[in-house]
Picture 1: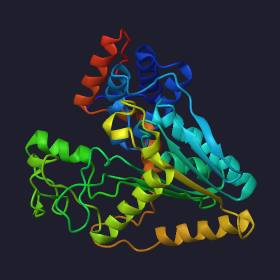
Picture 2 (picture 1 turned 180 degrees about the vertical axis):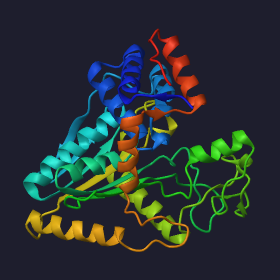
Picture 3 (picture 1 turned 90 degrees about the vertical axis):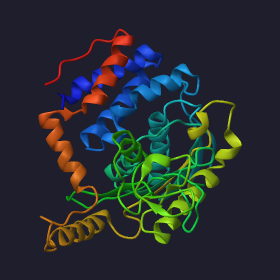
Length: 351
């Protein structure tokens, strides 16, 4: 598997986006986000998506030089339009607005519409944590035109992977950052299993009759993905749809073919609150750090080396890949180099 230094991968990503029509401000931000995902070990949201973004620019779904703007606001709320630019740009802007409002007013809620794929939702929770805040991020609307997930007890897809992120500071300890899709597995894993002729884990899919299946060959034309945790995960998936798409009013902000069928009705809501709402920050940090240490100190069960808190693994992988380089699957690297060469962008060396 090819391995590339983070700075080289960032430079390649930025140059490709510039060659595809992005301005420097947007290209740099998207390169930051994609490489950060790869550094964190979340490769499904890293440079794997670069060819997709270039194609969306070419098809007119994504406006690579647009910049977000606030449509309406109060001291504690805002609705942000991304004007159909890169979702990473819009989501960072929206979180910065939420953090600023929460700093002044203690709590804030900011929603965004008219944006493309926002990438790793945990990144935005991490932004709030770095500013001494707690954040909840709800992203949905993808199933409005491209449904892939069935509601609990159903056999026809209606919803989508609907990711959620929550970030909480933990003093001097690694913060608690959870970030996951509400389906049992990611759609990319189902498609990979299709290509390889493999099965998916039990409890991941139902067929067109609503029966559990491990055969991905019919996805997504028949049946659909299942929420994690059965009815409990489905409740999270549905709550995400209400708090993301519905609360943001994303259905009222469509503009022709902009966004394409997957992102056209995307709505993302960020709820941010100061961690020191009810006690001095020093006390919150001491207590949250103590809780983190207590969890990590629990004796591991058979088959486990240790007990982790959500966010621990990403921090470790980030340190390792910063030091040793980012491994890129051969097929992904082949796609990136082909894209770069087609845009006359030099390809850096790999090991």
